[in-house]
Length: 332
Image (tube, rainbow, N blue to C red):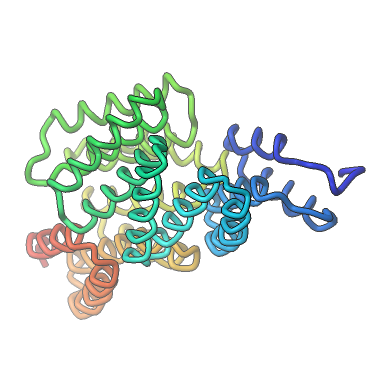
């Protein structure tokens, strides 16, 4: 493809990543790097971001780990921060939550020292996600607000919308009201105005789960189908899997436990194979609830043990409490 394999592909690679054409970006990098005499840290980092978006977490981590010391040697602190943040994101996806938290704390400390507001915002947002996962709702809200303030300060609309979306999802289940759904609607509308496919999919998936809780099944289905279509176009495997998990949850809430169990098990297996640990654990929880609702009690008990063990291993206290309530409330 390239007449001069030693040439720089940072620009074309960045264009593909910015356009959310992640599979094309990774293919371009891999094809070019086979014959290149020198691979630049920016191209490695861009390829790592593309790999992470399509669920190639091992490759993403390997590329970021190689690029980070090169950025450090060049005195490029933004590159160092970006690599550290990405390594934290990979650790989170793979279920190494303590490692992810350590990376994000390191990013925040480095960003504050260097005055890099963008990575102060990102690390605050990511630490808030972990706090929410652990059921630390007040801490999560404080960190999300910090991220929002930082994103507003630098005019990062994409980051602001993502933090708004996450903040809407972080409200404790018992406290969710119509105001939560309105917040989800605002996040979707803002993502639509920005025109970012991945962000639109993310906000649609968040709204769909809230709609399922409200028994607004047709509206939830429409959001899931559109989000999944966008995820397929971008090759965003985590979003595809989350769409499928919500289909299983939807079937369960509709009173179709057999269908819910079959679908949840398929998603759990795929998510486990892809390294999406949280989606796998949450799918295991749906499968257990579906078996109990279907009165397959011995199977349900074994599946519940697996779901609980998976959530405990993640330190997902908030999700574990929610699952325990659902388990108690599910009629056998």
